[in-house]
Image (cartoon, rainbow, N blue to C red; front, side, top):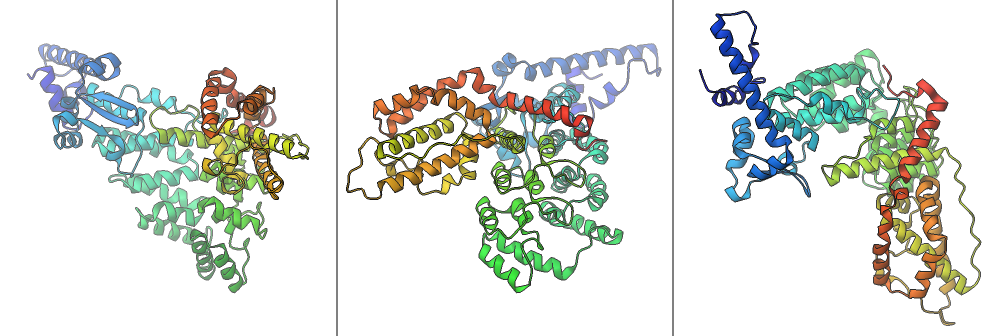
Length: 577
């Protein structure tokens, strides 16, 4: 009989389950003589102990770092130490990767391996490493149960964070050629498909189409998407590149069932308008609408722009005032619903500022806030800057929608009259905005975009060389100085009003540090140049260690969740089974 190590190598490298032949035979299967049963028991115990010992190399941080001879780079500054001999024996793909590298350059970048075709998080990586080392998936149920969305009413069975995690497992199983992991992830997705929202089914179909051996997933997604309210254009944009046949089959099934019938001439006219919007040419769009005697609403131009176009293009289209921001498309979704599914906070806030109703529900009966909560992951990921940016973006969307139906009146400031009073106000506002950008850079980016401060020429924070010297008294020869200062004050004031509306907790924290006078006094007395201002803000960053800063957003979320639970009860459960 083979030794445990040889048996483990032979059975696991074959791509089977947890040591296929030997471990599949239980110690008391009733076959053969007593001696054979004893040999099987000893082999089973030995292999099980071997798997546990090897898995300890990757689960124990101290052992893994000390004995490892290679690293897998999950993200910048985040690496997982591994052992080349084990991974090369367990994965033909990794064996080829290591063979192509020099011995002293044994670093594998996950982003390079993925090649832009999928995403691999640290959780998914640790599961496949546990399988490589220990021969079985021990922590998969625990890891799946730990993935939740921000909706406290959700059972977390088929919300987007759960589906996204399973898609990562599917991708890493396909990439590393681990058939067991790929099959397990695919089977779980197949069981969840009937409970999964249509927009998530579309993402599953797109992921399955990009990989080989996932035909069963595509086949099961077909009737679900055909009967859903998913726009045909969204299906095309997600699937046409990898699965044109699936797009055609969905369209044919919809035609046979009489679901969402499409007029060919009308569809052609709409697509011409959409191409103009894709080119950011609102003027051409207007010409095409006039030529076909159509309107912005009749072609659902706002829905398309909110889903696919640049924010500036959407802003230009909204400024025309020719469309109804609360119009429902032929599938029953409003413009805000389309923007929520896109998950871009600047677009969501822009629509709310133009009068979009946050209380309108989808055809399934859910508000934009409920949909956004089901998309956002509850726990911040640790693996990559990109993953953290996605997480923060989703949370900001939730926060903006939470504040949309709240009354957060912004205090009205009197217009400064004299030159010095105007100068003092401008100094205060610029330092307030700079302080906010230091403490909440992503939120501040949203605020600057919504207030159009990032495109306002009166505001030049990005270009410090163009800043006027606020410590220099204006002279009589500066004929337009008051007008220029007032324009800058008004631009900054707009940003503060937007921040007060959508991020009241952050505004309250800023008030506590700005409005007591000490910060403004230091700004005036030091008579700083821009470099001095940056040094002061770096010093003030120490206040971010204060609990009230780190807990500010979380308290807002918890308060609103309690209010929602009181008002809606069990009806707040999105996509309930």
